[in-house]
Image 1 (cartoon, rainbow, N blue to C red):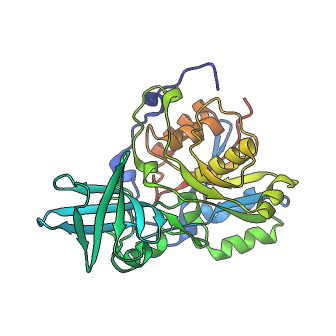
Image 2: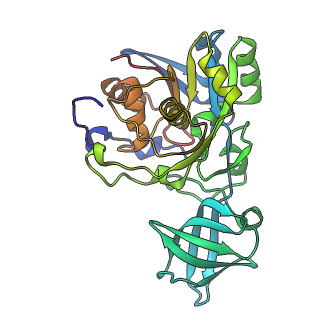
Image 3: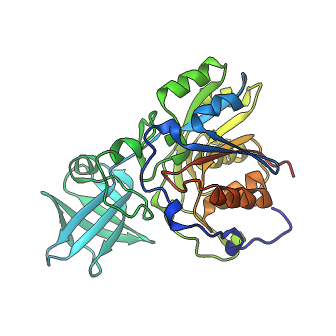
Length: 337
């Protein structure tokens, strides 16, 4: 890590509330794209992305699929309970975030529609819940799209499709890999025709991605572990490339850099990347604009350089870019120190 000691407050910035995107653009590729090149900027539409790619590049995408993880329930006493499924452990057992009008005790039962949920035990900040039917069956019937807390509105019908990438296929995420939301099938076809290899990995994003960091000193931060996997064929394509490794989103960066260190192709990662981290695999990052003081903006700062990142965010605010999950996106090549 770098000699400078970084603190959470180093990654603060002022964002006018009206720049938080509450809905997606009409078309996925209509979003704006900020190209960050040293201290210069280019302002484009995401549909222009092929102009910045070239034959031999490898575009790496996260194919995790968001599950309808948010459930509303009622206790025997009539009190309301909000459940957010974090991870399905067994067919009828899941680790969940739970909010209740009053605390839940072990063996308390909660009605979710016609289904029943029983609290088994507390596991750190989470609860292990047992469902009387398969978890995915209950989610399919009663679950809602788990929109981030800063999208302050009820879910709409279009969220089921638009808070999901067009290539999502591996169920398990409770938040979307948002940099991938800007791609449609036509754009991916155009990119492939350029001679760019398109490969996939999976990292199931947990709700912890939205939780504020508790530690002020970044060297003390521990992230919630998230499950990942990549095929040997995909990893070989990335490592034998003749061009650049272009990571679509921070989840792709964390997965590839974790594997670069461990050489383990499937498992869990709690890798926390902040300025001073030495990257081994990724050359270019495509990523949305993230919350102040979040682990995500810290990763971007590590990759692009702290000063360049904070200046880019200032430029994005002044240029009225849209922020967060349904917002716009930036392209940045790796800072070589």
